[in-house]
Picture 1 (cartoon, each protein chain N blue to C red):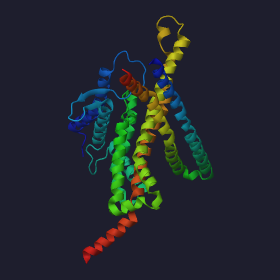
Picture 2: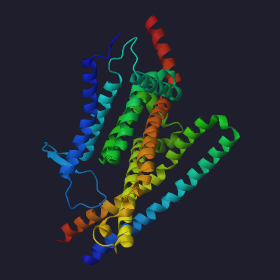
Picture 3: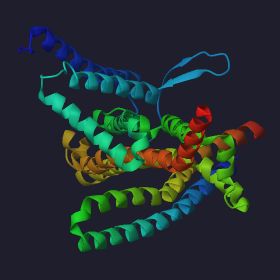
Picture 4: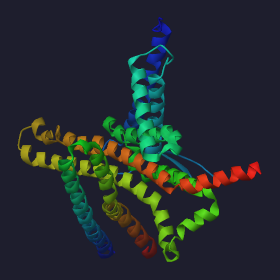
Length: 93
Length: 296
């Protein structure tokens, strides 16, 4: 029983760590977006406001995949262990 | 014209008090229901009480109460801003209200076009509700935006609006818009369903990640100050010196900047989705044809 519970906890932690690999993608994508925005502002300083707003919007949308990973990670860390342990206790008695 | 009578000032004071009272009420409820031995922990919304219902018990949670508080505060703030507004009377707050209305109207007009210009109040209320819900953490209350149920409600409301405007040209046109290349129809349907989910998760994930990181940093600083100052005698050894001030720097980014930015992005995406999904040219053509039919 204790071994089963520790396997559940360990696998949830490993899964959470693996899920957060998705954080690489939004990092690279947002870096590219900000770099291009800086170039654009350097070329045309007068349209700084428009470029900044568009860049923030794009960054927010690029961030979505990372946030999906975050939500899955939080579910794996705080919700699933209790759920699986309850199922285990109910079935094994 | 003497407008600043005693009655006018009294009503003003009542409005200001009604803006402060709900927040104090929320803090009072939180203090009453939080157990004493609860240290720093990551937890969801607390359940205040349950109402017995026929199918399933209705849970009144912290996030529902706090979003109601936000609504009351916003209502009285708006009443305060526009109190006694009429032609020829100008107070400072009237100008402030006018600036807000003008900004929202121009934002909606620039992003949605002339047809949707009556959307100003809706977008403004989404912006204000979302921003204030995130900023309520500054009073130590649980932010309603870090509860998926509240955000999912807003996202579903926006999704219903998007679908309504897509269906304005008739159900057949709506169904045809999915099968643009016929083979892509399943992907288009999945993409349509993903809209409210991604909108809800974007806002929820941003606010939640901020609060989780703040809690982790606060707990880490407590442990660190125990190690560094633990050898000092008496009270000095127990007091977490490193926790003073340092988490506030994070709070500036996660609570204030990120909360306001996410509110802006939620409102912006609402505008873009509604205006982007509506086939304006087709709708105007159909309107012209209908008018001609009526003439004949």
